[in-house]
Length: 617
Image (tube, helix red, strand yellow):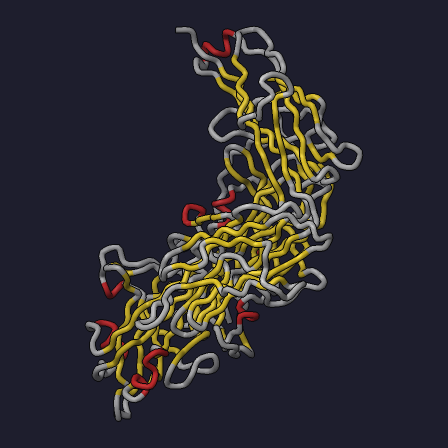
């Protein structure tokens, strides 16, 4: 049975994040509070997928790797000093959710509040978070302090349960920042699994010759961690659009290193007896040795029968690339690909662990997010594409991006990836004439930015087409949908001269003791009937100050007000000689955030308002 361990610490300094709501024009400096209302939000949870090119039943299938059994929301109140624990709610999978898919929907109550919230989603933690919440009042505990102590622990030598008939669902984490209003109905959050996965195989390109000299019988794992953090250290998280990845392992404060070995002998499908072990090994993150000491590095020891031997030989294989040992990172898949066996190994697994690598060569293939979403794999090569679908508005759009990468590099024939020439319109079943795609091919091991454009849809009906990326026998389809909806857009211009677009910042010079004249701006958006959202927030690194906004458009505007809006903005109050004497470079700021959605995508623009004093020479 898996043992769960949690530890806590408390340190927080609280300031309020000042925001506007649609019913309140002035928020005092003493802080913004929970409005007393809640709203059930649909969260779309996205999990990166690595799948086999051929359909196979797995020890843990892709559906089971994506299984969600429990859902917890941890909400943190955000201000310019940090984020602090606010509340916890449990969620439930939405009606009509597709279990195990790469995108799953759940419903969770979220509080409507006049401040920005960081919403952390954790799945498959069981009752762990409930037990934490019950220990004490955690309100105002800093986010990092709270999350860094959410840990899972396995007994020394224990394997993560990965049998298809009896498995522990993989804990996952994701988060998003949002200001929740009455009009917030759905949010999207990417998830990362907390475990790494390790597969071992004989190289499929050389399978017949390898099988004639070696039969794979066991895999032993050395130097693993007995604990793992559900949520990674924020400094190790890399965000790119809606994608998440980690750049370094996040280790619990008291994590112990277990020497091992942990021995695996499960060759059930998708593994193959004597050939491959797949879907059996899941492990916590582990760090590479700083000093290069092989006895501290996480490694596998492969056991098998060489030639006509009847006793196992053992061979050490390290996670070693480009002259360095590699960290074992969450949500990464490590494929140990054995390419040659030239003789017997050591007599025991422990001897192989402490000895030098002999008579076996292998390469290590590591999948990282790298802006990728789905990966297809045929046992030797992979093809990865960042998106499986793109939504476009009626007017057509230019240079929408996705990323493509493959390692397909055979000794003969075409290398890299290319686009199938037959891009077919799904309605006419004819070659598609309304899409432009460039480039249409790429070299192996190079992350390529592919741009897709569409002309205006004047057919009177939504339309779609499929672009198929190809690398060897690997194929990855991407569906392009073009609707009849108007493109979402926001324009912000000065109301009077110079009538030009507001560049994203408006500076109000300070004259001591005098109020500033208001600046008039015009805000317009499309579609006209869409909900238009505006709120105010802080600017990083600059003390906050209220600015007057007339009329009070902050909040949600819909229905009768279809734009444009003429808005007057000015700093609230004056600055005295005493203020600048204590602070010679006096400066205050506030940021306005505007957004609009057409149902396909959301466009956001910001204007930073600064009240700035320039000392006389």
